[in-house]
Length: 468
Image (cartoon, rainbow, N blue to C red; front, side):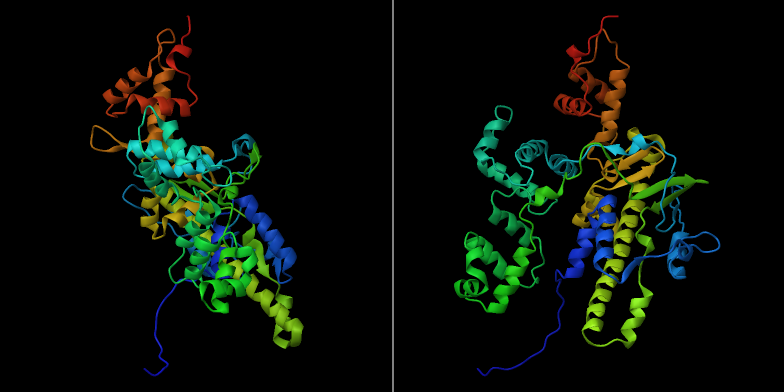
């Protein structure tokens, strides 16, 4: 056969620098985002803060460079069958400035909390859920599972008797949680999990998988030429694979829980109700970020190395502004969906919180579960009920006697109310609490009641006995 040239048309997803930046910005909390923007301004002369006088229209609405498209989106309101309406009001600081500062003091979220939250939202049977919780407890701060599977099996006994094959099956579920690469037993498996999460068309992915699978201990010494010779690929393919491997995170768990204890958090958005209309407002000062017009005009008449440098910085500035806008739009879509689904929670409290999972929200807004997970991670919202994390809007569900579902948060609120109303001389045991809940149409096992009671920091019945 003779060699010949041919063309073909196809689509592929490539993890470009722009896409990496967009994913990075989406998972940042508000203080981290402000720090990222300040560093970008210091390193890029084409970025600057826009003067306040340029941001306000005569009516006081937030807009940029007279762009009416955002202003139209700001005042867009719509209603559904429950008379819930929305109004999005741009990128100014949202919420009251006089609210109690104590509402914004929170404890840092640990990696264990982050994983258990996702695990409880998964549709796992109770047995697999218990095994998954044991696996999460054995994961260290870097995201690695250092405990052997035999040790996990011993820790679950005598309540649950399982073999390593069953634990390994649940481990695969844990390894699909965010952050990608968590639950790995060694560096090679951690990098493989991250590579497997990429699209099949990602340049260098196949070569990178082969390198990580067989040459993880020798990669640092081989280099591009050695890797190409060992795997029988071209130098360009080896270079692309090494670049992809360097972009992976060897310590995925370290990204979670980095915020110190008792930290003042800044809400990423604000939810308020005015005249019966729920208003969702993005917080943050990045709307004042703009491109320096003076340097931009210099590019029209410039030439040589200076012009080339400025063109590169201009492209980076445009990428950053575009990704910041995309971050805001994604966050608005998620929060708007949460308010629509959990309007009862905002009005009546935890007892009205309905079961809601990442998968349901992702399906409604047309995004992937991992995108929704990044959007709500370490994000806070200011509401009439205080400043709360976005993850508080999610809850796993339990089937009720009436054919519906009750969220775990609502059940915890019911347990708390039953304990508050009990006779202090004869406090309710976990079994009695389970019976009371069953009478209310919520069949819950005694063990589940004990777990929820411990999550509420409520002592056992014999520790609650009080002599009148």
